[in-house]
Image (cartoon, rainbow, N blue to C red; front, side):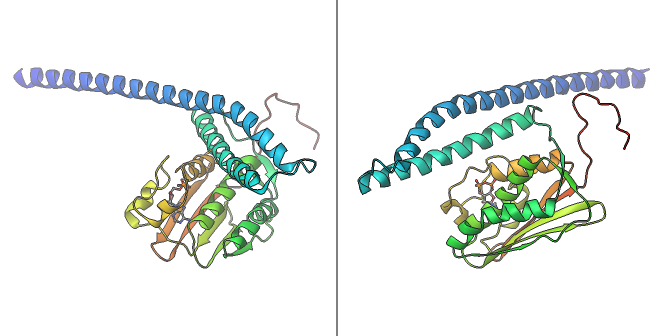
Length: 272
Ligand code: ADP
């Protein structure tokens, strides 16, 4: 009997512990929702005044009828550059917030991913060359379309490439896109500063930046890779990294070919 009573008591204990754990998980989830809503609200509030601030500055800078004294131009260009930086940060925060709130389902459309990716790499070619780095792009045509949300794919590619440029001081960057039987694999390899092994698991965490390294000399927020991971995940894909300090890093994104998203309103099947 004692044994049974003991088991009963320990069963009760387990049930209580389970209930306490469930409550804890619920309140953590609640906190998380509140934090996401806060991010989203703050970013929204920042966006409008920023646009109103930067619009007139770029208008003044672009006005040929009203040339500025060189010192004023320098100051305004500095203000514009930093304001645009802030704008990008706000945009990234809003993306993270809306993905977390589950509002940003990927809207996948059939895409010629090889051509699109090569085009995106082209956007960063000038910046890469200005930084004294080589950029090699290898995106042979794929045998079928890939279903991606173009705006999200653009963020994935541009975030990885701009990191590669940012954290590489000599050498170059190589972007490769390959079709495999079940998935498409994008790799971005650089000859940059690399990431220490113990930091590797955390680089995809939001706001995480590698401590005490050369990386600190570059401006950043630690949002980019978190966003890449979220976006890859929304496509049913993954992102991984391999790296050697002092030699360079390779980021690999794998996404399935996928299928188009179901239209919001069901339509009658066509005769095709
Ligand atoms: P950010 O670049 O804004 O700091 P990310 O989320 O894009 O944020 O990257 C997180 C951290 O991972 C960076 O701060 C940097 O320490 C490291 N990192 C990212 N990409 C690279 C890379 N290509 N080479 C070396 N370190 C990198």
